[in-house]
Length: 479
Ligand SMILES: Nc1ncnc2c1ncn2[C@@H]1O[C@H](COP(=O)(O)OP(=O)(O)OP(=O)(O)O)[C@@H](O)[C@H]1O
Ligand SMILES: [Mg+2]
Image (cartoon, rainbow, N blue to C red):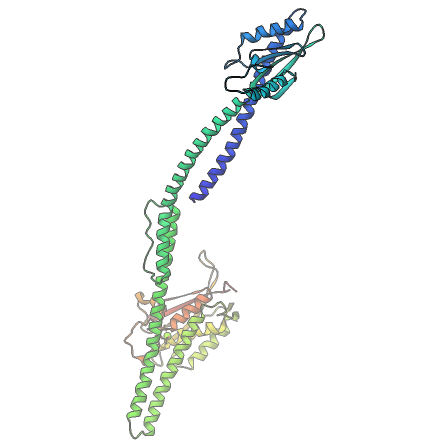
């Protein structure tokens, strides 16, 4: 960042410098031109006012005028040229031949004399001319016509080195100011950059540790950090919390699943060991052991099927929805279920409607609810009932079809009503194994509901037992 800011500053300063430098040069040149023009005009005016001017009187008048304004700091170089008659100037050394200065030799003097003679040649308007000692001059000459037809050239000049010096001064101040500004900006950028980078560096250190497999660290940013950094750290921490929860849930799930599988495996091994130590083995022994092993294998295969189904329920192709006519669908299902146990099976009022759902999954969910009801009710007169109704569209949801499976068993205690839908959750863990399954039945119902965009809930039935609600939208949202 510091490099970027530095580069931007350098480019900006360079552009500004070129503009200011050029502008100063142009401005000074313009001012010089105005000054030269006005001085030359004044000199020309003096000559023009002479009555019956001759070259000599003109030169004499020019000399007087020039002498009154000696060349130096205050005044520009003034001169009048009458070609063939001579020159008058407030700095006569520039024109024509003169003796060499002490530190000049004859060769240098010859060059200067040649330059002086060049100056004596009239050049109306503005011109740049090399002059001895002063260097390059900007000259302005204006011609005045004398009575006898001769022309006098009244001129003014100034060395351009003054402009170069002024520009040089501008350049020096600019470079100094630019260097100070650049230094301060870089320092500021560095301080601001490190203040911003410090919390980000911490975040990246934490991220590295997490990448190394440890998800316990959390981002702690100082209160002085910017809002964006706080939002980033918060989002990161939330993500880590969710990740930890997901890992915990996963670990718990695997532990529960292996525990559930281990139990039947232990039974099978125990029975086989028992058989091995029995001598001689009677056919009754074999029958008994094979019955037990068959039951345990059936239990294990049901468990693995349930686990597989739960894993699949998160896949996008889990459902194959089709239109279902509610009345015949529920009646057939309940008639089928009634053959599996001796209970009082009832079908309540069923609305005559169609919904779109996966018929196999829906049947499985309702069967799970039905078999729970069977398990928790008395033989013969226990009530196992199904109802369906249409919940109209509200602000929270579109039209829902509610299936309710209720019984007159012991029911589910209010504090357990939400938890019964968790995987491997059983209200009574000490229950004899024969009396129940692994605790996946309601988790599967919940997964099927969720895949349809619906939900499940438990409440107390009118008969005092459990009432399990399965709510499905008439149209699954994703299909
Ligand atoms: N109709 C009900 N009446 C009383 N308790 C119920 C009823 N339905 C479920 N429960 C309780 O909810 C818990 C979870 O039920 P779920 O169907 O998920 O598991 P499960 O029936 O024990 O085993 P699985 O269905 O996998 O064979 C059970 O422990 C059960 O005690
Ligand atoms: Mg069950």
